[in-house]
Image (tube, rainbow, N blue to C red; front, side, top):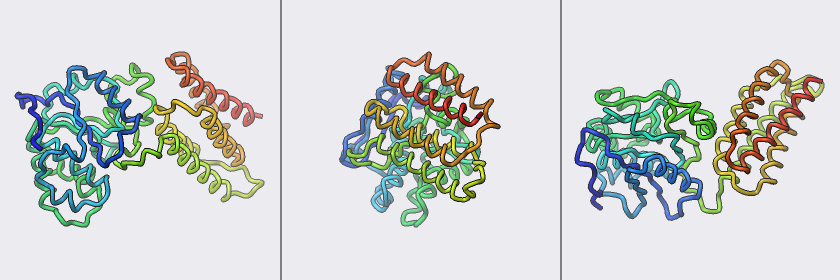
Length: 336
């Protein structure tokens, strides 16, 4: 299939947002919501959802046919579509915070840092036939048949390697621009994050999960992971010995679980509360000492209360108030 016509001016990135969704399953509602936010923030932009039967003719078709797993195929197709069509291609679990137009002035190709060492490939942009992506796809074709892992084949490892060799003409945005963590914060308070343009919720949109799989079920999985970690932690300590846990690691796990579901919670409130209660119970059983973190917790509680006051939707307010009340009870017990 020949790609539809694009903007004539190749000195600018075409105002087109591309998404990929492989397989036969329908796009899950949470990704439809993110797509609608892209349209809201970019009303003058064209949007395209590429499916298996609408893909353009590919110069790396042999490599794509040999690729195992959806993730590797998504990585290859991102680069090929951007090379041919130009525009901005984003994963379906990327949520926009504000319009990209001011960010793209004078930019002909861009990537974003992922942490201090990596280059993310969930948000990419370029003019059609930009030399960087031409070279990237050329390198892809030259490695047909390699047994390298997904990252090295066409993912972030591969992208970093190509950028190291061909950095000219490519703008590298800071990690905060597209990969701020925790990702659930900027959508709630965009004015507090003026340098964040989109967030990656890490819902693994490349996985083409069955329609019976839901974000809520993923929440169950992560609650189970947190619970298992706490049990393992408590098992390493004598029963009479207080457990001094690496609290930041536990908080990171809890934030990861919340990040993956916060924007999708729309029903089954009682089950979610029960799951949060289970996490709280495990924290109590593990005997985690939080006295030295009291000041940090107080600050977190004040920020949570401010977010509650500003909340727009009743469901979010109920969820947040529940979390605040439970944290207050935990602090009261641990201070005694």
